[in-house]
Amino acid sequence: MIRDSHKQQGNRRKLVKLLEEKGIKDKRVLEAIGKVPRHLFLNSAFEEQAYEDRPFAIGAGQTISQPFTVATQSELLGAEKGMKVLEIGTGSGYQAAVLHAMGIKVFTIERIKELYDRTSKLLPKLGFRVKCFYGDGNQGVPNWAPYDRIIITAGAPIVPEGLLDQLKIGGIMVVPVTEGDSEVMKTITKLEDGSTVVRDHGTFRFVPLLEDRLD
Ligand code: SAH
Figure 1 (cartoon, rainbow, N blue to C red):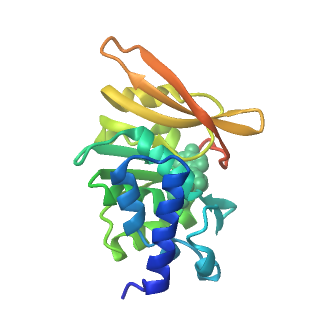
Figure 2 (figure 1 turned 30 degrees about the vertical axis):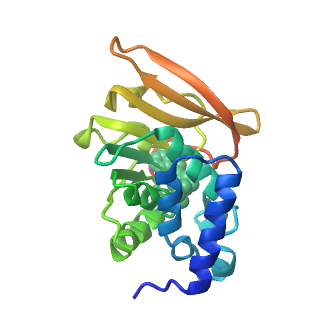
């Protein structure tokens, strides 16, 4: 049984309104955030606050991203229904669920076993058919490549150039790159000749993208 009370639905509508006020324009993103029960991706201790626009601890020293960050990254992806998207950093599974709710085929990889185990069970239970992998996202998921889009949900020390090999021509990677003590959101578009166009989209805060998986 999915617990989604009137109060939670009401709070979710308010969150969607807030995100619109903060500048999110893509209706498909707003609709998806309006559908996904964020309170079920959090420790039940935070349920009351689940629709506040802030991150929460999800265990193993990690966080579920702030809704504004999830909305911004989803909007910047510019993904169409049916596209294949690779997410690096499954975490709580919330970002993956939002993309799935937009009709996207989501592949997601997580390096912390505890989070992989929990989230790979939770997503199907809530009806989100997302393919979950355990491993180091810096290697991508070559077996299912190429992807139309790649989204990285942890702060990368540099643009992970190696992952561009798994991106289709014309594809877009959305990646927060650490500069000083925060992350600059970047889109990297891969052109026909293999070159890239990089654009900046403001400053955010992320947990770091780490090397190697943890066993
Ligand atoms: N998208 C997540 C955000 C989680 S925070 C959500 O919606 O909840 C970032 C996640 O990236 C953490 O779970 C962290 O363990 C994971 N991560 C960090 N480095 C990684 C790597 N090299 N490969 C895969 N996952 C990684």
